[in-house]
Amino acid sequence: MKVGAVIITMGNRPDELRALLDSVAKQDGDPVEVVVVGNGSPVPDVPEGVRTIELPENLGIPGGRNVGIEAFGPAGRDVDVLLFLDDDGLLASHDTAALCRKAFEADPKLGIVSFRIADPENGVTQRRHVPRLRAADPMRSSRVTTFLGGANAVRTRVFAEVGGLPDEFFYAHEETDLAWRALDAGWMIDYRSDMVLYHPTTAPSRHAVYHRMVARNRVWLARRNLPAPLVPVYLGVWLLLTLVRRPSRPALRAWLGGFREGWTTPCGPRRPMKWRTVWRLTRLGRPPVI
Image 1 (cartoon, helix red, strand yellow):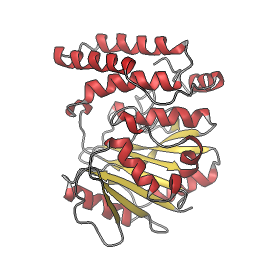
Image 2: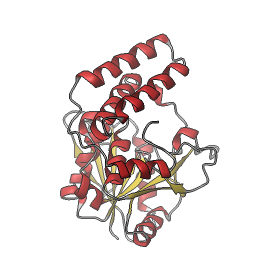
Image 3: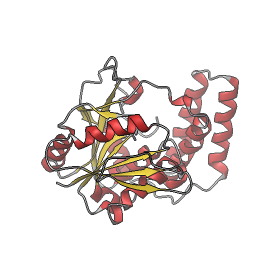
């Protein structure tokens, strides 16, 4: 299987980007073709053979990654699998691409693989980086219902069948939107603890737009993908969870503003999932009400 990689960058981590590219170049087997997308910024110096695209404006995470997908032909069809890697990450082993090839070859219905993210200093995987509710053991691989945006592999036939990431989301929940559409089309998603991306431990709230985007996109996610009866249930549960977590007053104000924005602005095309997909999500341990 032909494997490519898409990396988006703001150009502000040249050393980390170079280390990541070196780790991709060291992968066993056939070389991985790489495209680096400068998301509204110039691309730092990269090794010979790495393709670059410089966008005149920041299109957000999903928009930048979609540009990278199309660099491999419509829906990425020039390769069989695309890796999506954060520019400050580092592939921990030389066999990650080979493991991806084996996984997709062995399971024709496998559409997406979510890697394990580990801190490079201590090897710890944050609970939020295990894409399932039962996240106590990050070393347990399993079927899941979503994936990690900056450490994953996607079979390009998924994009051809269900489309790319939702550009309008800009940041937050774009992976779950794609995951739900893929699951609704019959694809499966695996979390693999043996495929590791080293990444410094960070808090998602370090991003200034975090609280607003999380709330707005949560509403858009439900409006786009859930059967009508589940939309208020799903969003009601998340509203209660947010209040129980007792965010700071500025954070709560931003969250409520984003929640309101999600109801009052266009969310993109609505394609509610089938009820049998709701049941599949439930059987996989994450019913689409939480």
